Length: 255
Image (tube, rainbow, N blue to C red):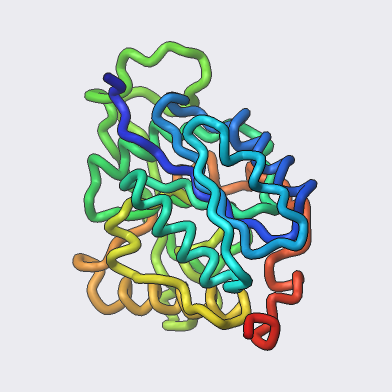
């Protein structure tokens, strides 16, 4: 039996065949986690070119075909399917190609050890100068003292991490939350709910991170917190396509 729980890797996609293939290949190559514990969930938002069906027959892959739900609806569909497989989800979109290894064993153990946190962010925060960050440490010795496989990057026993907080000035210009690549626990989704559906991408994501900011400001002890490990502050991904907001997922096209 594996020492690690199942992990769902959720990918949303729409009409980006080449980019999707590159992103999926990079994820399978760069994610460090026991392969037998990984479940890959692909949610396609009604692409004219059905490029995801070929993955339906692959072991531990799940493919969902949606009919033009827009980014918010497609994201919620992916989250529901992924949570049916695991408490832990690595959330991805089809335009972020992984360029360096991401060791998810560490993120999963961190969320298991620290129930007040619901998300580990891997998307860069180097440009988010408005975000307060509190340096903390986490004792890892019960998990990682015997790891000598050559791929881990964390320091043994005491690992430094940063807790991300909303801006002190009560603005919503920046948020600890990002729809970019991140690992979340089911309790994070329970705390903050679903994305707004039937809206443009920009609205759905702004609404979500405003919701996160509000909860963290009002009661930090009840809200699900967000952490990042220092080595992920700078990007480990390459943006290889137009963002979801530029693919004409407009409200009128969703009718």
